[in-house]
Length: 328
Image (cartoon, rainbow, N blue to C red; front, side):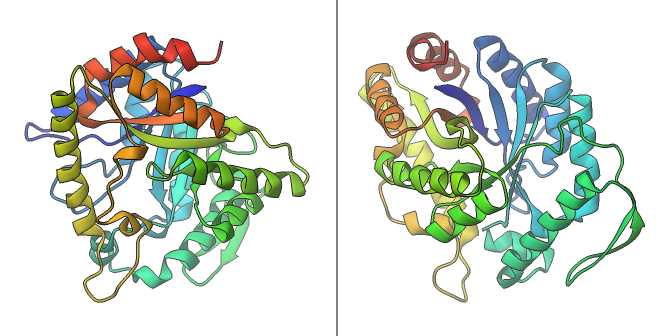
């Protein structure tokens, strides 16, 4: 199995101490053998979350040499796709081809409200932006584009990305239709941190069949599964970590709900659900059992969300669990 990191950072009250702490954390993760570090994009929370994701990843790439840097995810409906193509290509060039660009349509009601973009337009905006993004990276000459949301006249995107034809695109999906769309678009697959090993096994099987039906070879390392991680020394320490997690989760659910309608974000499906069974919280033996279940389900790439950027958990996982499951 391959292990990377997934999560966020908060700037902190002293103008960026939390961001600098994340960079130091990424440097240590590389030294410990972690393969990648993926960062979220969020806005308007008041929590000082990562909002300029690619800028922070640029700094992480500059401080490391092998660690792949990824977004999980850049929300396409909020971005000018040509500017995003330029910024991502610049990061890819500076990192010498270490960018994994996770993209999505977004889910938090308060963010769409803040940007003045109707949530109902998310799918259409995502599809159009993705078309432009890929064209910007792969067009052999200048091009123009006229669409519903964006228009560009006689442009060329510079620089060209280091990875050809472009950095790997990672997309989240869970339902059958969305899994098929990711395969159709040639993307790598991101699976959420709440789904069971059995549910993810079925999703991977469907995705693999769709990929191969389109004449491509399925690679299990092109599927990543997120999991929340905390290595606990005792039952009490685990329970305290779960309490902190649940408080943070309720905060996230609160900014995801649309007060004017039912349903909405995928994350709301888990509102009121105990997700502890899918979390890697517990002793090393507890965590090893759950990783074994993921491995048996065909999962080969796990992105670990370590709450609070705990150095102790980062180190204990690398020392006690990674050697058991990691690729040789």
